[in-house]
Image 1 (cartoon, rainbow over the protein chains, first blue to last red):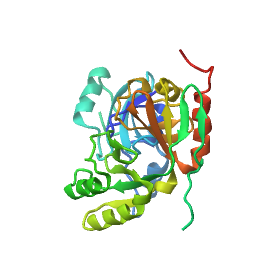
Image 2 (image 1 turned 180 degrees about the vertical axis):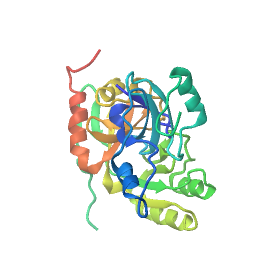
Image 3 (image 1 turned 60 degrees about the vertical axis):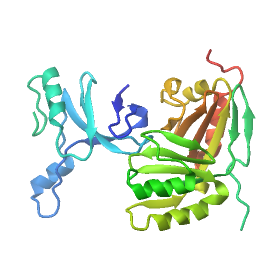
Length: 109
Length: 184
């Protein structure tokens, strides 16, 4: 069972209290972008074995969206952070580097 | 005006914890910056309570404020006072980016009484009710629906859910409190 700490209300929320929101840090390509960019935005997703960044919503709690970093093979949760950001915080990336040296995910490493 | 009734019209069930419809409760939902002085003052004027800290609840059903999320508070007050209080708050918050809505008739409120209130709630929610401090408002999932729970003392719990699921909630809590189903 996955337990994530909601950064807004501070509750250690059980997976059943949350709604999954898919991959984090997507960059939107809308009108004016190329077909390849638009296709990538709509359909192309990371599918890593290891470090992954996701969006979650504390739907049966405070209702806020937030980000989570976790490992898909061990279910280890590295941390959660605010939704008002376009990249994982430096501190969290450092924590992940200590636990999974050499990790990379999308444009982040 | 027509006579207001709750969804369960005063239903109660006596198990090893008593589950009862708490009757008509006035509730106002407020969204805005909870640290704003005008917002705090408007809330205090209608509830008599100060703004609670994160996840806190100040006061009770006849006058209180519950922390619902970083930008949402639930004001509790007597049912008859809610429409006028909502109007007062709207005027007080005219110049502030905030939203005030009366939700008294959109919700159902339950009161649970008994030595084992924590156990009865713990059976139906993933929240850690055993360690829930008195005076903390815990929004969580209660079986299949959303609910907000708090303890006003060790043997009394209050629960707010949507009115549309009031019947489900009553059956669920009554069943959880059924004699013979004690965990210990």
